[in-house]
Image (tube, rainbow, N blue to C red; front, side):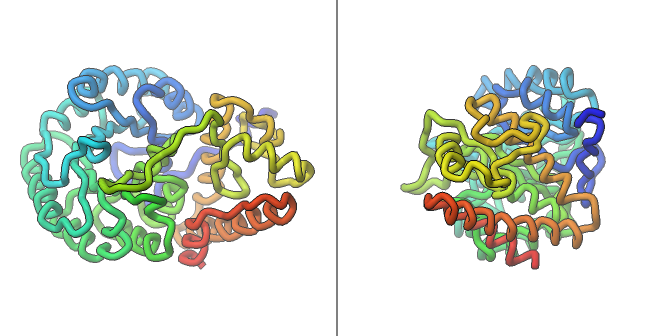
Length: 364
């Protein structure tokens, strides 16, 4: 019997909404639509596509969503990210929202549209008020369903979560949160607690442009969690000096037992020092029990990482919210020990990501 037959579908969201059947999403550039759509077809995963700016993005929208449905199926969910909240020319959250952008998404077959919101910086309360006032205006004119994107500095999740949730509930418009920081915006216990508080609202909410927190969000009432397929799509870089994303000739690959990404050259060096450790073995459908030093190119790393993550989602979801959250917390705590063991057996400094401790503490 093949491994494919034994694989069960990814469980649905604990907080489903009409028109979205998937819980776990891949957030990718629109240029990867064919690769992502194939994954979505095989794994029942949704997709968020970040579009290029300006007229180019508008022109490509219909083609990208049509290509996705052609490969993944007519019922597959694909959302569009206008990405006006990032980069040197980002717009503030007070910028007007485009009804035409929403209509283009509906006309292209999207079950839900996503607003072209600008970035909400810390302390920008007036911009927050403008964002939701503009969303109210859209809601009065809209002919279909839409999410209000809320791209925000992580101060809004670590410190201002009660204020943000109050505004969300006052307006009642479904939201998608995206957070920005010079590092991981959801790496602290305070940030995780704030995120879970936001997601526990009666107003449907989701999380995108994030890292492994997409899985944690699914244990906390998120409609869906969308994890970036590259470092630049796993959080927003805020409009201040410092931080940013470097480049490397080596692709990164997911270490399942560590719930973490590492460059393939780093993995290869560590595996050579402790080749018999079981945490180097991957049982995703692409690897089939091979060691992670078999991942030698970007295509293999990409496919392996996404398939391993969908296996992780299957493991976490399937019970009620308390069971799912306990499962996720236990996996994060076990992953910390995996990192400690790697450092001990290889002698290489191998610090575990801070988010593991944050989720492990909150979900005890």
